[in-house]
Amino acid sequence: MRGCFIAGTDTGVGKTRVTAGLITALREAGVAAAGMKPVVCGLIEDNVRYFSEDVDNICAASGQIPTDRDVNPYAFPEPISPNIAAKKHGTCIDISVIKGHFSSISRLSAFPVVEGTGGWLAPISDEHTMADIAVELSLPVILVVGLRLGCLNHALLTAQGIRASGLPLAGWIGSRVVEDFAEAEANIDTLTARLGAPPLAVLPYSHSPRSALPALRTVAAKMLAETST
View 1 (tube, rainbow, N blue to C red):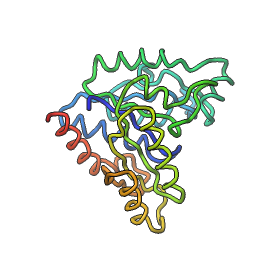
View 2: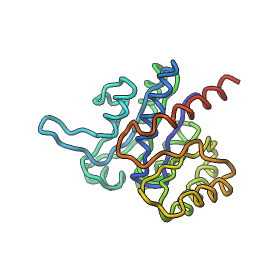
View 3: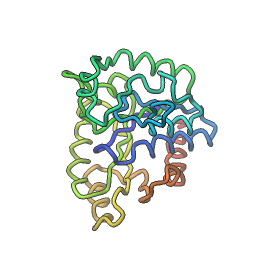
View 4: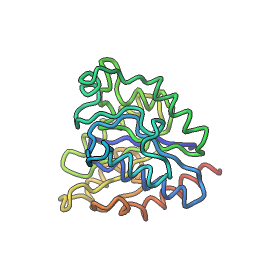
């Protein structure tokens, strides 16, 4: 692997926690990892600027600048679907533009980590979805599964879509998004059997962006070991 695309079963499942944590772990291991979130929907205003908490967290891990368009080419204030947000602001999310910014990051980074928005098939225009961005960037996909009721269906459908795209599913990460999810371990066992592999990691329930780092250090070490063989 020389980079990866972080996909999720839905919005709010911990993709940014994985993206920032993985970048931090890789950089601790001496790898020049950098991040990218091509599309952001939902900005925060602090009387000085509009900003994305996701982008800020990614840049805090990577040392990049949050206002750099290479990191985030498309940003919309409203927390709505990318295709609707783009239309609302009279623009079009252009995959070739995203690929150009990705190329810039790749020239300066040995391991780009790209975070998707929403789920795998979240629309970005009338014709394209988030999956089309991943395919254009030609990156292996790590799937973040939000561990909650419905996750089995969401994870299996998403994995099916990733494999149908022709991209390799490099692994999946369980993310505890419900504090007391009944039968969490049984769900993890079911996904292990159905997806054909155990999770790369299972992240604890936490609101701290650094809570996933211990588990993601192990993931990063495994990725680097596989790359070197």
